[in-house]
Length: 172
Image 1 (cartoon, one colour):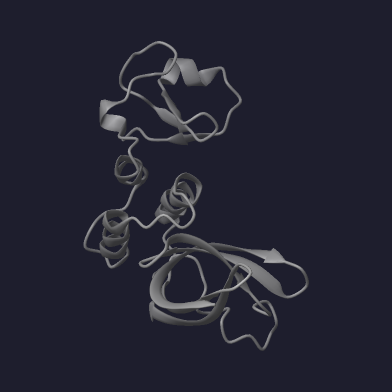
Image 2: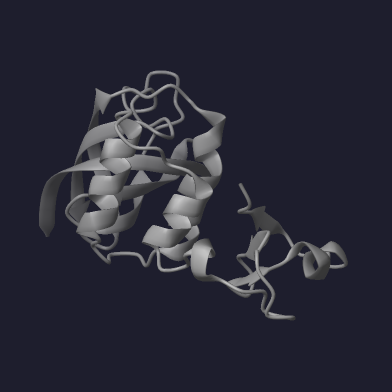
């Protein structure tokens, strides 16, 4: 059994079962982690208010037959800025579970404290998909307009218009 106390950014949580949930965290110590949170959806749960997306929390995680979230305490509550939803979804989708990324952690922590701007372009650049240097996957034109999570390619306005794929807009 491994126990770890670390700071984490809550990316999102999804309900499982009657009262439990899977909590998606980006942690300082372990990178992106999906942890079980038992009884988080009960009305008497002390964890649920701390585990709201975009919060920076101090967590205690136990690894034994998967990762269990035992404790969480809000270090800094963030205003739920709608501009952060897509960047946090990108981090959840494009980072590997258990892969620690110190630079991304510092960037997110500074961004959520208001010292840096977190937007789609800056997160993609930190993850190795910099829109500034990208060309369209179909026609090789610049500038790019959208990023596809399905195939991890950028597309220009003309090439993305006829497709039904879900795109993330990256233009300024």
